Image 1 (tube, rainbow, N blue to C red):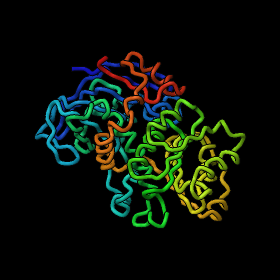
Image 2: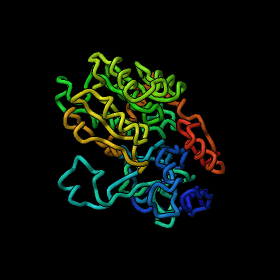
Image 3: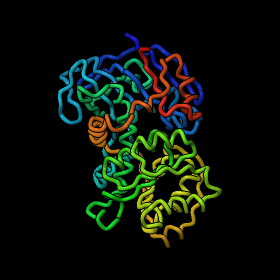
Image 4: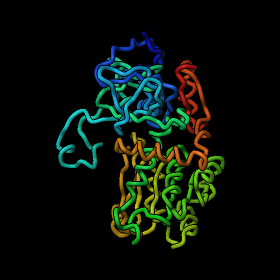
Amino acid sequence: MNARTIVMDAAGELSTRAVPVPELGPGALLVRVELTGICGTDVHMRRGGMELPFPVVPGHELAGTVEAVGGDGRTDATGDPLSTGDAVTVVPGYNAVEDWYTDHVPARPLACTDRTVYGLRSVEEYPHLHGGMSQFLVVERDAHCYRLPDDLDVELGALVEPLSVATHALDTAAAPGLPWIREGFGIGQSVAVQGAGPIGLLTMAAASTAGAGQVIALDRLDERLGLAREFGATDLVNVDAHDDDDALVAAVNEATSSGDGPDVVVEAVGHPSAFEQSIELVRKAGTVVEVGHYAAAGEASIDPSTLVHRELSVRGSLAYLPNQFETAISMLHRTGDRFPYRDLFNYRVGLDDATAAYDAQAEGRAYRATIHPWE
């Protein structure tokens, strides 16, 4: 049996191949992919912004159903047995080795020196089907997957990965045991999110769900700011409505109860200028979380003395621990009637139109373009 699969042969080059489905080893799963989202990382890959082992099978924001279970059976990451027909989503990355970081920094598994990531691997590497832009995906024994609730639309499972990015970014801003003295993020505090793309919108929803007293959305497009309101934003700031950064900072300051800026700023634009702005937007002794720059997009100019004199905490948020998927699934399940998650899927195509979907995502015409391999 073969699977029709999108392959990125080199930066900017997409083709469709028939890739043989391998025999499953013990503990492996064969997942019939229902849909895969195209995210900023995929766009960077296509533009040549990442060093990759081409030809690559792209796609890591995915959901599908179990087609077959290898060997002696398989459970999901919570220990629930998996059976044919179960709806699942897959954590793209797992550590391929146990190294110093594994033993000495266990709370930071993403620091591991050798990680395997679905959607970033060569099609020539066994088991070949390890990207979401394919009719089938092979989930290896060491990879984490999660069964989706029976009453959750399987297509929403493709939002579990980006929602995990968003919730982890917010978690990164928390200072355990200290939010009551306004250290990090806590209930009732103010959060500003730069960028009303999918990660920014999901971060707003996460902040609102977690009890933020104020969620300030910043973007250049009124359409996206309108959607931000539906995703929990209490205050909307159009960046282009202000003459310069000083005017923008003044407008955000004025919106906060302190008059000195939000407690937390999450940068989800992915442009160096947005990071520069984040340092000025946050209040003194506040927290900035940088989540927008997964791939290189240029350099930012920051005066280190600003960090010192304003006593800022600046934290990088790469992705998430595997169990962040539990948080995301729970939130999707509980807040499906509160936030318009489906509105993010506004550009839907089959495998043959993948190039058009990449263009739509790169040009900002799609919140999350999705590839549906069986359409």
